[in-house]
Length: 233
Image 1: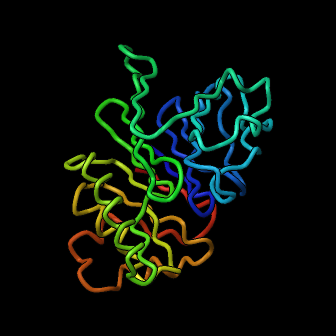
Image 2 (image 1 turned 30 degrees about the horizontal axis):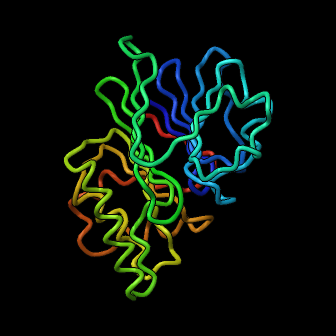
């Protein structure tokens, strides 16, 4: 598996002859083989998670399929692309190539902000992309506590799962900027955690890893230092 950080919450994951592109809205993409099946995921309609650029040549190849959160307007999709698009709601399961060696299962969670998170399983490996499902702990007021409760209820749905790669927000604007990852690891385990949703503030990753109580899981958190950085897993 190869993971490339594009920007913000956008990652390209390459697994054999299949590639998965998450929350693309801008940035340089590595060349994707035209022989690869490309699955494009957009977790919700916010400008920093979705753009109609995903329908342009270079992404929209013959073997490209789209899985868009159903809060994204159908009017944003070119008419000729609609047959390739599956609009997904929270708490839904989709099977691709069911019964074949390359079978893939897509499950959605309900974001406590907007749209969905994605859980994708292929064979024995699983991937989690949170979208904007997170512990949005701005200052600890009543709304923050309700959002935290909704976050934990969604994590309960995947309690005990192990992920090859998990993409989880680490947003430096938040007072509790690290709670999303900490909470995630109370419910799940992962070989590799990729922080995201930090815009261009790469330093927040070092800040997190130098904080208290991270020694037990610091080894699984990847240090992203630049746009376009790739990781061989």
